[in-house]
Structures are given as structure tokens and as C-alpha cells.
Length: 439
Ligand code: ADP
Ligand code: ASP
Ligand code: MG
Image 1 (cartoon, rainbow, N blue to C red):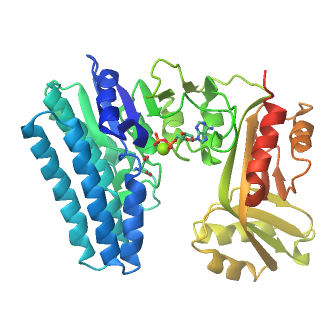
Image 2 (image 1 turned 45 degrees about the vertical axis):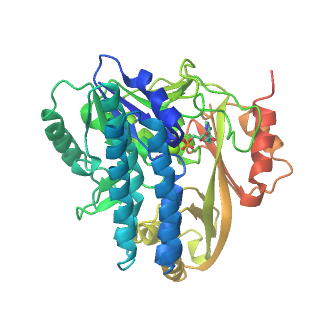
């Protein structure tokens, strides 16, 4: 069994919904994971922000504008009165629900309920459209099986058992449709896997059912060697290893959710990245095979904070580093990069939630400095220790850009460099010119 995930652009209009049918309608059984229509989650986030700021009239206006957009998609998608009436009823049900929440108190939980609407609507629309077209399909509600534990990690046992139960009631439908992104948390409340989380849903489901392959369908032909939003003339990489893809996704390649490679890597399930706008393109295949090349790709992760701790007590002392790590552990804040000298440690985090508390705790150990608006540039390639020549090329490319931290040797397949976010685009372009010169 395969898992197919279609992102926002792939369900972004009536025309895109129609284009999905030939991609999923064959005689094999598959789970189809859908995102919300392009732009919907952003609009729901904006509504929630207005709601949280007490601007409920403006939130309602946005809600009504989005409702109208959905009615016009339904008008274009459905040919029969029966199915367009059903679709319009469904759309109204969801938007009435959102509007109803605006009359209540804002809470994080109500916000998550609002954010879940996009995927609930897109999956129902595809199910209705297939029914109108005479193709059997079944909706598997993600909220009945997708669950995260107290640390926000997938609860595989729960997911497997509940997915099994959902699938036991199937007749002979080949197309099983479910929502990406949404899940329940440890309290059973509606929650989500963070922005871009439908990729993660797909690989979690793939791992839970031991899928033959997970296909991530998006709006570009595979994983590119640099960020196409900032750099021209990027090109697709045909094969990547799980480790390489995981590093690139974690360090900012938007094509994959940062955690989405992990479940596939765990169960060695191949992940194929495909383009709905050009389905015949082979895209990128991610497997456990690694084909070392000098340089494979570059990615950038923004929103990084550097924390520097200086203390003379570090000199020749043991246990100091342990105490620093304990602080981050107690605030459940992961560290991305770290460099040390005799009397100072610099490290980076991307989660500011507990920054004031972390600083306060670290000040007991030494002098603390913090810098925000930093970016980690990650270069993936062959950096096995003992090789010569790679580091100079990277630093030659960056010779006009102030480098703040370097992490080399922590991984065989990546090097990370910290710079100010304002220098990111220049750095990405310079690295492209040097590492991937036009042929
Ligand atoms: P979807 O809505 O299908 O999940 P996303 O917008 O999340 O699509 O991801 C696809 C986008 O990721 C591409 O359109 C591209 O702009 C961006 N992107 C960033 N880095 C890369 C990269 N290295 N390779 C391909 N796409 C990338
Ligand atoms: N709709 C969600 C988002 O926009 C999840 C996804 O598209 O993957 O973040
Ligand atoms: Mg995405």
C-alpha cells in the first residue's frame, strides 16, 4: 500500500482537484493525505490572530470572505445540484462553526479547532467530487487515529491500532482519504503537527502501516539544490539519502516538514517527491542509499537565536557543559549548533518560548549574551572526515559575508554556518554560484 500526500497547491482550485483524479484512481489501494487548499491555513491563522487580539468583527469579515471563496470553488467543481448542495452545506457547517467560536473566549484550543477546518473541508470536497464522478472512496478521519504524546511526538501505538480499526470497516474502496496536519494531543484535544505538517502526517501514516512508498506531491519537480524562492537556476536532485533529506528539511528546505523524514527513515520507507503540475517528471527519490557527491544542496533556516555563555570557571573545569545542557533540557528547548572555546560556549536555539527563563538560569553560570535574527545555512554533501577541499570552497564563496559560527565534523554529510538573517539571500546565491556552477 502507498501513501500519497497532496499539498496546498495540488488542491488549490477546482481545476487542481480534477487533476488529482487520474493520479489516484487505479486499482491499487492507497491512503491519500490532503492539505488545506493553498492560502487557507494562512487565512485561518490571520483570523485566529484577530480573534486573539479581540478584533472579532474583523475576524468575522475574513471568515465570510473565505466562506465565499469556498462556495465559488464548489460552484466550479460540482456538476450536479445534489453534490453542489452537499458541498455548500458542508462549507457552511465549517464556517458557521468558526463564526460560532468567535462569540466565545479566545483560547489556544479554539485556535487549533479553527486551524483544523482547512483540511477537514479539502478532504470532504475530494470525497464528494470522487462520489459525483462515480469513484468509490472513503474518508478516514485523522482525528480518530492521529495522536501526539506529551512531548509532541507521534504516538505510534495509538496511531497503528486506531488506523487498523478505521480500515477494518472498509468495503472494497481503493482510495482512502485523510486529513494531513491535524491530530489530537495527549488530552484528546484537536491539535496539529505545526505548519507544513501534512508531509509529517503522510510519513507517520506510512510508518504506521508499513507502506511500500510515500509520495509527496507538490508544486515543484523534486528537491532542488538550493531554495528556489531566493536563488535562480536551481536544479532538482534525483536521489537523496534519508540523512541528507532530513538535514535539509530540518535546516529550512520548505519542500518537506522538518520532522517528516524521521518516520520514513525509521521504517526505511522510500519517499518520492513529485510535481502535480508535471506528473511525468521523475522527481526526487529519498531512500537509505547514499551516493556521496561533493555538494548536494544548500538550505537556510531562519529564526535562530544565538546564546553565548562566558565564564572563567569553565577553564579546565569539568561538568560545566553538563550544567549548561541541563538548563536547556529543563526548558525542553533543543540546541541546534554549538561551538566552544576555553572560556565560552556559543549555541543556537530556534524556540524562543522560554528564552527569558533560560537566560536567567544561565546567568548563574556566567555572563550571557543573546543575538536574534540569525540564520543557519546548511550545506549537504560529502564531508567525511579526512577529505580535503570542501571547507575552503564554502568559505571562499562566503568571503564577503560575516560568519558567526561554524559546525564542521558533527556529521558526515553536512556543514552548518551561522550568519545574520539579513545576509541570507546573498549567502545562498554565492554558495550556488560556487558549488553548483551553471553547466
Ligand atoms: P505544499 O503546499 O505542496 O506542501 P510547500 O510550499 O510546502 O508545498 O513546498 C514546496 C515549495 O518549497 C516549493 O514551491 C519551493 O518554493 C519551496 N522550496 C524551498 N526549498 C526548496 C528546495 N530545496 N527544493 C524544492 N522546493 C523548495
Ligand atoms: N495546511 C497546513 C499548512 O499550511 C499543513 C500543510 O499544508 O502541510 O501549514
Ligand atoms: Mg508543505
